[in-house]
Image (cartoon, rainbow, N blue to C red; front, side, top):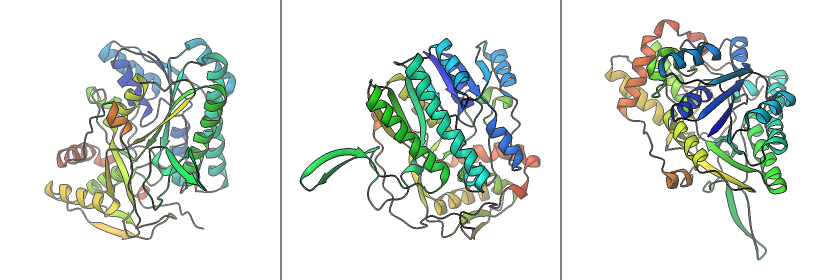
Length: 383
């Protein structure tokens, strides 16, 4: 396939680019370095050294002989994005080009406005670039399980069959996002659904849980190909934060009661899921939604796992409950239907002790780069 990846510099974007290129697809990535700039502005740089995109592509080519096309450009500039789509004529566009941090979106007006404008404009521009230049292109958009919130019913796979006053219908599952970032993802879904049913676009929307991990087949070829591993309170996902805290000797920061339950997956499974979606495209006029997760844990369970494995490695890991900076249910019902990707062949990489010890070992190699000032929450949902 001819694959265009928007947001190709990100934690998931760059590993996806290497993965698809290694499979023999023609890959081109676009990024405007927004995440890098925000990380610098908030003192939230990644733990592992990450060369710029051009250098990463050169390193990857020097090892594999495979070229990944790179453009530094802004998807919020319609003419720029439209030009890419018109000239490249991609079969698949993988859309990661969004500000991905819930805490950043809740810092204040400027950060909220940046999140809103970037995320919605990028999606809107993508829709029109495809409509006008490549109407049969399959859009694979990364959504989030955070769109759903924590309803007191089972979370179906994107859609809900309802009966009301004797009549039946199928509607998008109700959304109740817990941050502005997650709300922009809800709006993405609504935008895509409108254009799918009106103009016949073909879209797969992946409702992904929090991702953890460092290692992929390609990143392990050279440490300079590692993904952007963040451990801070702004960009770091909970398990990646815990791993770094364990190595740094900082108590694992469990927000509130720690009963918050979510579906998680290894970065290797993100690559699997995106590949499965791309290889099995949605039909014209179809918004296909998959819930993308492999295991469900509470925050307390994750902390206990990291503590147990870390202590076995001599790290003396402590756990500390702190005031929850977020507005969320800390104890709730959570049961997710997630059969679609498994039916396509997803083979999960589970969170075993060996996986945890491997990640802890890698983080330990970069211990001198850990800045403990970045760990405690700096953003509160309620002022």
